[in-house]
Length: 507
View 1 (tube, rainbow, N blue to C red):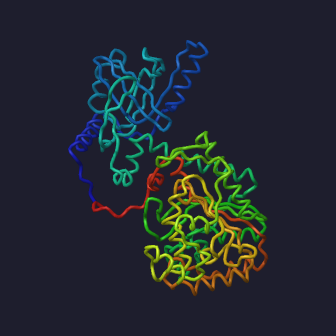
View 2: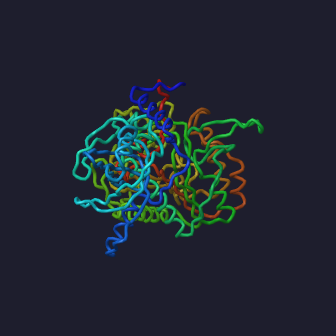
View 3: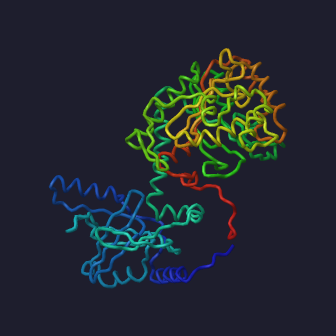
């Protein structure tokens, strides 16, 4: 649709016209920037520390964030991706005509370039004394919503955003005016870097597996469906990397991992987004106990590298990830919080009766596994604030996990929880192709055809298993949730650059 311009935007469009009339291009193709703000400051401080009297000449560029006109001198701040630096303009050096151009045609939000000599002001701030400057990109739309901010002892106007819905829809503006939001995504990048360093150092190979899959699997979730015109077949956006990564274990790659996007056609909530980032790894000759130990080490490593400490605040609680983490069976955890012993209720009907007797609401069409999962999510999960492993899960909600020796109804699976939120999920992986086929068939009978928990039969995966799959431990973790924890954010939307939102009325 055609954009409608506000009065302020129309005024800035007029400034673009005037600049061009004067032969000044408001969007030049080339820049002459030589240093970031941080590099310019560092270069000056290095020379200052060495006692050098040689002038430090730089050309910096960035968004104009603050301007203070003080008679024949002007102070301004520009901001780039590395930080902020002060500019000093003097009429006696630049001329009245040039300074009048700056006052008349330059606005907060514009990107500008400034060349000059770096010095330190009487207040101690490293500053560029401007000898020349030019427009790099004229901002037509003013950055939204102003608040007062103190810069170098002066109160100046600074733009910010407050409404979450607007912030998520206009993340570009949110990033531009909220430094703390930019820091969230720098932290996110550091988290992913640390995860890679940790796994690479332990001999894991990073791989890529298909996003478009002919059969979805590896998790209990409803997929997104698309269609390939030439092949004339439905394809699914992956809900998990699991079955492809385990094929690689069959092929002799003993330690593999992938960091990438999964897609699940599920509800949006404070901890769910249809598109999210996952880490999965598979480790031949390991079991869920070894994976528990590695998980503790990995989270500690990330905290050490990213935060420089092993404690952090989350939702008003002080979290400490120092090992060992608490370990408790799912059965004991549910018994403590609900009074229901799931082992005493081996059928759907029996468990449903026990839940109804305690005033709990249930879906009468739910299988036993879904009832247990609901108990966990509603009653036990919110109580798990400090790092906790829940382990030993019912087989009927873990079709890809290996049975616990001597207990055919229980599998070797654990989930890790921090801050009342599930962070990770892991198994001693099932490697018996006959048992796996039986599990797939059981899942098909236990759930309705349109149930999102239904796990389809994957014949090719069974064929891969039949070649011989070594024992292994597998692990999956939501990176978005880990970033939520480390940045103390209560909704996943805060840690996704572009979260999925309902279509707005303006669109």
